[in-house]
Length: 354
Image 1: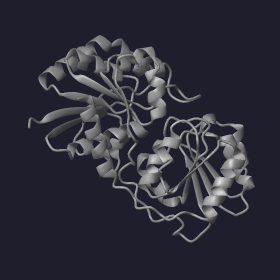
Image 2 (image 1 turned 120 degrees about the vertical axis):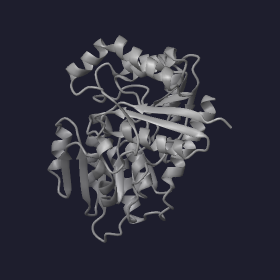
Image 3 (image 1 turned 180 degrees about the vertical axis):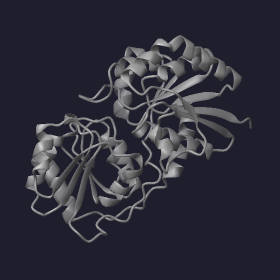
Image 4 (image 1 turned 30 degrees about the horizontal axis):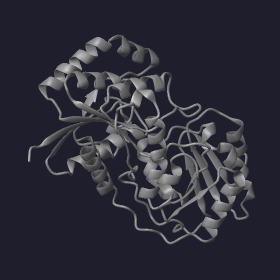
């Protein structure tokens, strides 16, 4: 059988995008008769972490808004250089692991070179306060250059399928694999107060107000940490003033994520809306309990997970779910084999894309 060459790229600097690209590239590399090339931003945080890939091409992206504008002004030159590079070493298929601002340039060059482009679309619509300027405009431009679309929830796939820009393009919903390398000791093995954790972008749609209303309803003492980057808000001020709650408004470096998972017993996802949760995928990989609201793609992601409890996006429902889980935690399920899950995802993408 001929070897299939796959290019995986993601030009974000930090967060879930580069991590997904690395885990997916590693999963594809484990498949027989598949040769993988990985391309990341030269400023990708993961390149300097313990999850750093052994071999990756790097691309100069930007370090400021003016830098991004400059790269777009150079778009014809960049596309031409990428096009010539693809002709010299042409992959059979290219996968964009998560849309970023400059990805449309790579996709354009790939299509000119006759390479099939697969884009993993994580959000069909921008969440309130999330993303970057022109995010959805650039995502639609990327989709227009793509031959095939993959989502991590049927919720996102359904919304995308109704968009004119996606007409005639196959959209396949696959499961978000648990991230590799987030194993941790069993929940509650520390012997102290139950540890609750909410981390990620601290934005209003994440249900910070619901969490602030839910925590005072708990009758037992807990340690709760709310960690992530976001604008100061009344909800964060309320949370920071609560007993047993610590708010850390900061970016969480790549190498700290596993330690946070290991610290927590229960991950909280009190969201008002969601496509799916990369944070939740880390929790599953670490064998954590999860309390998540039954919104968007979260119900799909956690409905079959024995250690997850779904509830309505209301403070009382969240408080009841947390209390029920802490009072009678279900048996701990075996931690999934994350590496094999990403290998399976890669195989499904290649099979579906043809």
